[in-house]
Image (tube, rainbow, N blue to C red):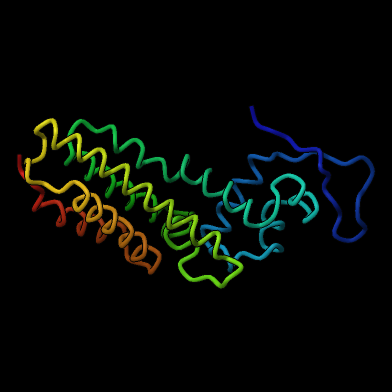
Length: 210
């Protein structure tokens, strides 16, 4: 069920009109995701966000908290939606399948037509001033958590004999996630999907054999 919030929609010319109308919180949050994804945390102004969300600044604060809290909610939505390929990839039956799905998912998500290029979790706050430190730390933790999940999955692959005993699951996880993050940066720079997929395929040609 989609949530509606009765915080009101204000006219930019004349303030509140009649009885406050509710707005669709989920739809507003989806629009905020796209703004942060496209412009980053510091680049996204309150005016950009509220215009895209179709609500007033007052309503935004009432429904989502401040800008940093809105970003946190947007990152959660991104992780569940466009970034959900990581969770699905971890369910692949082999470690190579996991790595292949992670890289393919990264290429697909960071080059989607009619969507911002790159990855919200990578470019969202690479460079921020002191006011954005909390968001920068949040995204560092987000990226590290993803790497930890991949490491745990590769450790299971070692234990099950799917990867050679001498494999370092932490190093292999860091390799795959670093490559994925690099793909996201290249996508944001305009490198095309086919070229990025070729790079991912090349990286997997030397996959450890059990």
